[in-house]
Length: 170
Image 1 (cartoon, rainbow, N blue to C red):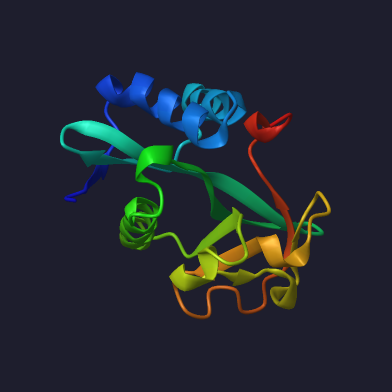
Image 2: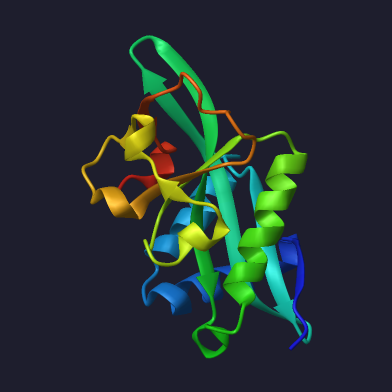
């Protein structure tokens, strides 16, 4: 199975919506992608294409990490969607690896994700808690993770993560 990872194009938008609907079994994440795009809050959006068809999608948006009066920026991974019929075939892994490499090239240092504790560590993600970073919503520590794209980027940084307002209600 040959997978091409590339930036989204306007022609991909219906397929991206559909992939998110099917992967999550609801419309919330698909609508979130559109809200982030409409708000010009997309840092990176890639698709996985197989045989000319979009089979996966990954999106990153800006997050703010606030510690008292100090604020700094990172990016949040999500949503990521892979069509159910091609899950567990490396599509998600290919999307994440390509996206993290591109984000590093673009100069981003830290990526935050709320996701499966068994899945994301293979890409360098680890719980945020030991770094003194938490989400403004209480979630189990093992599912709120980060990856340092630049070693030492978190030195001396801590705080509370805030996602873009489009995430409210998802």
